[in-house]
Image 1 (tube, rainbow, N blue to C red):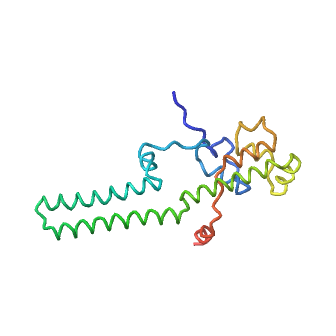
Image 2 (image 1 turned 90 degrees about the horizontal axis):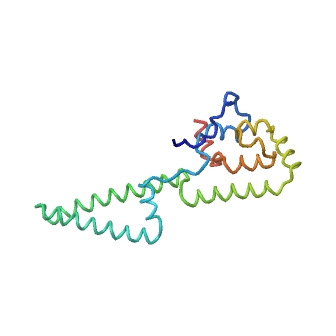
Image 3 (image 1 turned 60 degrees about the vertical axis):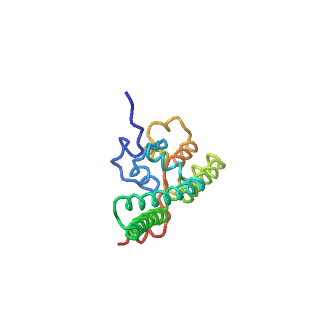
Length: 189
């Protein structure tokens, strides 16, 4: 029997309201702790996510457009009309592709934004790992997070860890809330 991945935020103590943004992110995220596997379609699309793949895809798109135009001509459509229809369809496809890119930029789901988020998380974990246990305890006290709250948000897997290790695990496994200024404007509306 296969088990579903453990979900953050679905622990037994979810009845308590979160006291910090970090706890809220853990409780409300409900994302798998481990990285998600790509499905077959995503793997196929990811193959084209290089400069070489983009070059090949461009030539394939030109070839498909040319083949579509020739198919229309073979179907009895005048050459000029076939060219107009082919150009219109390729224009719509290009607009769609551009809109998907602009959407990814707006939602910060580009490769650069994801790498930057990962880098920022790794820098934070590195800085936290350089602190000793007393400094971690003081930092937790300053922001108002108790060891019991850390344990409640992470579940049973942190019982045997020190407070420092538990905080490090929490930062490693938590998707941080967006620091995008546009999100503040969206919350005001």
